[in-house]
Structures are given as C-alpha cells and as structure tokens.
Image (cartoon, rainbow, N blue to C red; front, side, top):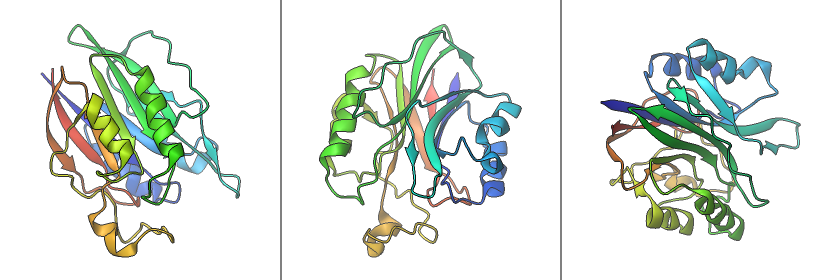
Length: 228
C-alpha cells in the first residue's frame, strides 16, 4: 500500500485560484500547508480542503505581519485521525501543526512546520526552533514536512538529518523564482535554492521525491510516496 505525502507553502500573496486548482487534482493522502491565512476568508484553504474530504489540524502558533495579516501552518489528511493530544509548544517552537492518523493498523505522526525566515543565513532562533521540534518527535512512524527556510547545508537541516531521513537525496530546488521576491536574499541563487523538505523516521520507506509544477505560489509543492 502507498500514501502520497505533499507539502506546500501556498504563500499569503498567492493566486489562490491556482493554488486550489493544483490541490484539487493532487490526489495526496496527507498534505502539509504553510502560510495558511486563517483570518482571510478569500483564501480559506481549510474550508476548501474540508470540502474535498480532508480533516485538519492547525498550529496554535502564528505570525502576524505589520499589515495585520496572520499566517500559520496546518496538516490535512484523508485518513482516520487518531485521538492524540498534540505536544505543548515551547516559546521557541516554530509554527507547527501536528496530527496523528491511522493507516494499515499503525499510527503515523504528521508534522507541518514553518521555520522563521532568516534569508538563508545561520540564525540562533531558527536552530532553537529545530531543537524544540526534535525534542517532541516520537521515535517511530514520523513524517515532518514544511518550509524550513533553510538550505541543505544550514544547521537546521543537518540537525534534522541526524534524527530523520531526508527523502530528497538530490537536493532539488523548491522556489518559484519569478514570484520569490525576497529583497534581502541573493537573487542569483534563488533558482537553485531548496527550502522545502519532507523527512521521515528510519522505520518508514519513502521514494519518488518530486518537486511538483504547482502554480500561484513563490514556493513549489513537493511530494513523496510512502510505502506502508
């Protein structure tokens, strides 16, 4: 049996029609979404995916911009949800949505996270967020995905690779360069930059990591197939 796992930062300034167009046909069993905008009824991704039969969990931690917009992370699943209390978030925790699901007689622990944007530079706050995440991870049947805002050589990713398996051995770039408008980042590197990852615990078998061709966001969706 197989499960399709998908992660996507859908960008609070995205073309929402293109976002939903892709998700409608993605056929993913579990979806991690970053930059969910819970207060913006014109970008109601929760209602949209609920209408497609997905259950959801939203991070209790969010980020509010100066213009009042709020973003957070969420997990969506077509599988049965296991009644399990989420871990308490620490002060340095990232935006982190958590859900446990049941499939094939096993419980899987799913995390969708969004680390602080540090313009692809080493930063203590981001490393503290990773340390906080790692502390609460179960030992087995774990899937952690999201926008880590960190390139493969940064500490956040090397620490994740110490405890989980990175499902993308090729380190494929994940930014939609024409839309990624970071004024501080090195523009010459954007087309080759990877910020989005799917990690799994060593007891899980994953393959076929793909950077998908989703439109509308400044990030590209990434997916992997999980053998169960």
